[in-house]
Every structure is written in C-alpha cells, then in structure tokens.
Image (cartoon, rainbow, N blue to C red; front, side, top):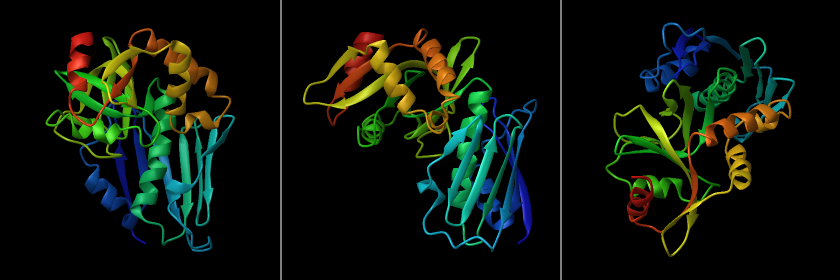
Amino acid sequence: MNEASFDFGIAGTALRARGPAAWLTPLCSAWTAWQPAPESVPWDVCLTADASLPVPQGPLFEATPHAQGGVCTLVAPGFEGEVSAMTGAAHLRAHPEAGPADIGYFLRVVLAIQAFARGGMLFHTAGIVHRGQGYAFFGVSGSGKTTAAHFSAPAPVLNDDLVLLWPSADGWQMHATPFGRRRGAVRVAPLRALLRLIKAPDVALVPLSAGRALGELVANTPVLSADPLWLPEVLTRWEALLSAVPVYALHFRRDATFWEVIDAELG
C-alpha cells in the first residue's frame, strides 16, 4: 500500500496520522476543513496494515474501548489499537480489508483522549446554534438529538452526535466536529446551556439537579469513562463546567415549540 499522512485538529487538539493512502486519503478529503492550530503540538498516530491479523468481522466502531493507567486499547478481530495519554502517541494495526471508516473511528478515540488531556472534552450531544449561542441537547440513544436538530432548521448544527467542548477566556465553547451530520458553516459558538432531552406531550424546561446531571453527563462522555484513573478528573471537569453553564431537563415534542420555552427562560 502507498503511504500518506495528514494533520487533523479541532480547537487545541492536533493529530498527525501516517499510514496507507487507501485509508487516509478519503479522510483527508472529507476532513480538510479541520486543520490544527499552527502552535498545536500533534500526537503521532501510526497506522499499519497487517495481513497476519484476521479479516474484520465488523466495524471497529463496535469494539469497546478499554483503558487502564492512561492507556486505552481497542481490540477486535482484524484490529489492535493503543492510545497512550502519557506518551502522546497512538498505533493501530489493522487488516488490509479495514476501511477509512474504521480509521476514522480510531482517530476519534485518539482525539477524545487528547482533548481531555488538554482541558477539553468530546461530548455525545447535538450542538445547535440559536441566536449566536450554543445549546447542547444530550441524552441516551433515541432521546431525540437528531429530532431536535431537525426541528431547529434553519439554525446551524455543529454536529448532531458529537461536539468538542473547549474552555476559553470567555467561558466554555462548543466546536463542530466531522463525526456526524452538520448544517451550515458555523464552526464554534459559546456554550449557553446543557439540555437533557425527554420526550413528552407538554413542553417544559426544568432545572436538573447537580447529582443527576453529573451522572448523565459522564455517561455521555465517550471513551474516558473506560478508565477509573480518568473518572475523578472527568467529574471535576464537569463540575467546573456546571458552575458556569446551566443544565436543564427539556421536555419536548416533535415540533419547534421547545425554542419558545428556551427563549422565555434563557433569552
């Protein structure tokens, strides 16, 4: 296989991936808008095609990350990956029949770990920009993130599945990622509120207790909950964010009336 490399980054993250061109060229084309800041020091991501591994039985996305002591592993038929937060390096060996989507998922895991090491967090949420402010709609699969994005049209959607939360001098910001569906050209917005989605016949915005909010926010923080070593800092990070950003339970139905309630409460 011909070799290739490309740099990828969001906010203060930066990855430099090297490996087979058949894997990286499609990602480089699809993610060309996400370039790391010039001052960011990239983590090296080495990708190796290894025909001695078994043929993949499914996508790498189905593999569960396991972490211990700051080292995260992803192992499945056809894949052996490792990410070290201590060394700032990652390596994935994969059968040649693996595809760009598998490599993209591995890079997503690496970015989640690097973002956390540098002060940010990848968050499983729909990030919607309304009146210049960012709103994070979160919840378990099926809670309505994509629905909320649909009924918010034509408002920009940073991503309907994963956004990057990043601290700044003016507070927390919500950054777009290429890991799901987007709408519009907006790439970043100040985080105004966290909204836990609950499908209901009547629309209401109810303050969420800190205890319940922490549990649900941690559950929607991918990769990091895999290592008990990271959990105390994950909780500390969310507690700091909750001291600056309000969190609510948003009871909503399949229309855009939830924005009327949000505007009445948050302006």
